[in-house]
Image (cartoon, rainbow, N blue to C red; front, side, top):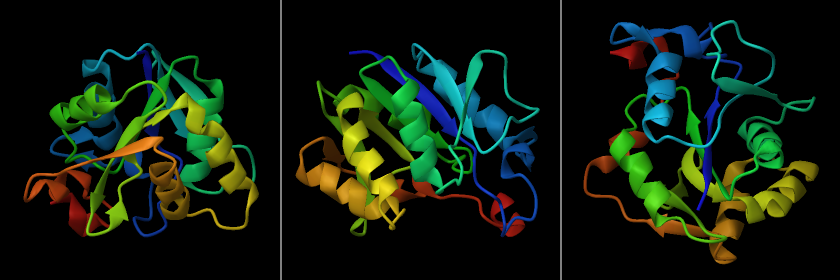
Length: 187
């Protein structure tokens, strides 16, 4: 099984007031923490998904731009899956610094031919720290063409189609999926 990875950094950071990717967290910008995690998994390719080219993008990461108008994370996921040449795409949001390499590795190991892996917390899927099979692209692209750009319904459909496997979480592990949306979250 072959895997590519994408750092999803296309959000508008409205609540934060500035680009989340460049915010310092524990002494380093968020993007550095997340790229380091993706590199540790040794994917065949690393992408950065954004609405425009970002000055901080590392040389080993290929830029994938959202097709305008951007429809949030769904746009980045569809654009990157369309470009990847691997069987699976691991997606990690730039604003989820509590995610660990170990959890990402568990997701990669749970993936199989035509099947990715995702976690669900309190009946809500965590689509921005998950692995998607290349075969999910038509379903995701169809959702992008609709008028509902939320990842929740399309991820539920992928689970029903058995294209995503739900991985159990240990008690307290939901913290891995916590995102930083406001400056007070940086603590």
